Length: 355
Image 1: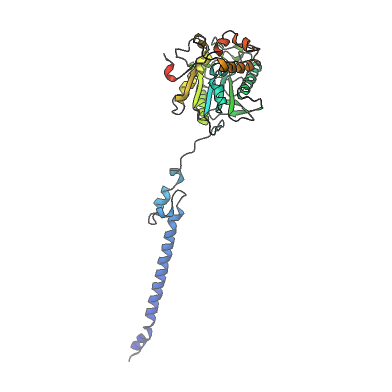
Image 2: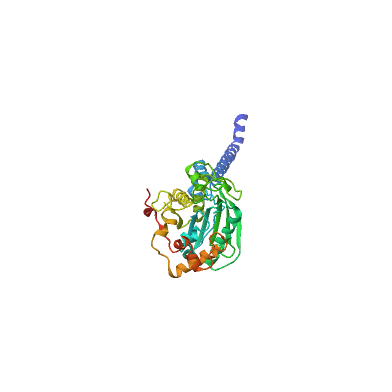
């Protein structure tokens, strides 16, 4: 036997061992790769996607389809004026001057309070009659006391200045013991029954703002100036924050019931109508109250409801030295006011007879 053949016989046992080692290494590598690939899809899974629904063969696609920017809705901003009303409907009312609500909007407002509903009232002008913030503050106090009379309590009210997302600033009053109620004042200049405004506020009026002859109005309390779009956007913001089932306001410009009314009333009604009618959850619930011309319509408030309405009004007048009345008889005998108190005529959109 040669040396070569003898050496070959001695190496034969080594070759199978090497092959076994190579195979073992390959198997280990394959197993390791499988484990790594199995982990890749789970790294791309979000809370909205379960691991079993993400195929291991397409980990990149699964991760991309689960990105929050594509699947999560953008949250709706919450207005700083938002107030909840759990378990009860909300009545929103928007008026030109402090006292329009209790003269024209009652007994609807007092009925809502008695039923346990939430009531959110907004006044756009200061009702200052050119007399400044002193008279305005008195009227506002009278309104809060009138709401105390309607709710049967005289607890303290908290006040807070709120800058709406729309840019307007309001002062909100709310009873400490009754979160169902709130009253908001924007304090824009009173436009005067002549629609010419007052010298003290530069003859600025809501009518001029609506018609575009002035670009903005400055509140009496030094708040930021507001444009027509500010007012419209503020009304939409408040409606979205409160989600009212009913909205009370004035008869708008262009209605057959508008001639003879205060110009501020007609503008506020028009602003509310333009801003809120397009809202599907709000528009159908808007009711427009006939103002000064209601004295020509048949009397439709009497008995206990008239007594309650007159008493609420009397309480208010104790802070308003222009129209103060001492008792029921004196209030009902006040020129024009006594006639308005005995009437309340809400009109739906279909009743407005727009020209």
